Image (tube, rainbow, N blue to C red; front, side):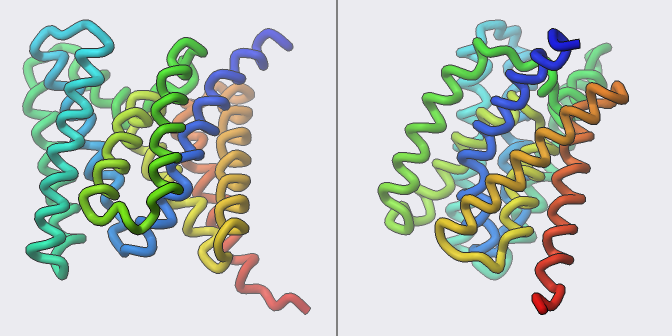
Length: 249
């Protein structure tokens, strides 16, 4: 039994790494009111992974490069659209998401394993993440956090979208599109009434609890880990919102 539980250590570490970047980015996403940007950029990054597979690229670096290039292209489009049509940005983000998702379906239409591949990109395979995958991601996230907290609002539109695209590209391949969205939005939304460092710490703690509970439920009941974590994050977020509305006396 102890050996089985030890298998959850790497997936939990992956979740904590994802939360390290996605909590502050999620807070900024809520501030800007562009809630579905994470889904759109994540889906575009996933489209890059699909395209790399169709070209027969097997190298992890080639696949990562395709995902990054796709995500950065999506980020550039959203930067331009925010400058040109700021009042339509949320609608354009949604349109980018559905277009990328539909393009992925079309590209995999003749692939006998296309449905399975799309499922993996959407729900992720967090339970099978290994320690060897985490070191490069940790290095990337550290660099992005240094840029984020070092420059802050001075990053501007293009800087924000670039940092966002790079972070989401890495996390999509670790945990899948659904968990990327839940990791960005659920903790930040739950702790929206807090400010500054307290909000960061509380959001990260709630996210860590969600990942831990989801992985435990997945192991106990043989459930898909990604879906279990998403549900735990959502339930904890709603519970925190309800608790915040209760009178303190």
